[in-house]
Length: 374
Image (cartoon, rainbow, N blue to C red; front, side, top):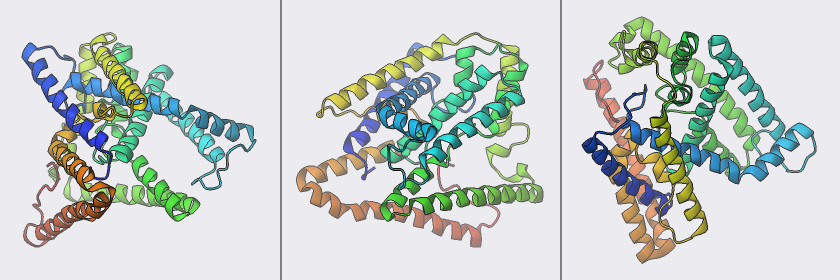
């Protein structure tokens, strides 16, 4: 948080307080979204409001980049070179054609799994918004531990309603295996890798390294998890993901059964909160880009209601106070001089986790302790 813009850190802290106040008022008057969604951990109304901000952030980002994206697509499909892409990690033609091929494959896979094409399109749109939005927030806001406020499945069902047939509901339930409690993505790592490739001028080599790391890491993790499951029994892991008949799988399929038993049409209650979030983010984005003195960055709307923000809100506030005071009384030189101290706090945190891990190995083998949120 010390390294990000003070407008971003102030916005996160400010909108977190607004979210707490809004949640208190909503609880007092008893008006909230009454149809809960799987893997939505915050207050339902605030989560849908944040999802609106999430979506507006992504769409406005794409709109602002429309000229460049249009030129990239024309060069990739038309063959006429108008932009030099030799310094990119992959050529524009490879990137565009690869994205289109992957999108067609995913839509076809979802269709064969039981989804109607329009349901699959809505779902994939929500997935892409979540992936792009999380990547932008990691890069711009410095908050690495993130999840989308609302799942893409819930977004599709809010628009279409749940009376869409068992084949669609079951296929959406199965999709939670790869888009459920989304907290770790490849895209932010790829974005950081692209930046490192730019700094050290090894972009094509960086692309090869990222691809190799993805294949090796994915294969090794699958083998490691399956080996542990068969050796010790997944139900003995002590994680809610692996609770027999419950956990993540139970939450996903219980939602399918609930939709079977109690179908409902388009949920305008959820979509109204979604619309409020989109409008609020758009207004703040307009003010932020038009007036240099405007103090509130719109990114806070998308981040503040997340349950992760509750864990770091006070740290964000302290970072904003520290950086604002240093910049005000010491200027840019003082800011740069203080950077090693704040980066040392990050290194010290991970060093503490490493030492705790060693303590668990030698004195608490097989028991262990939670180092993060538990």
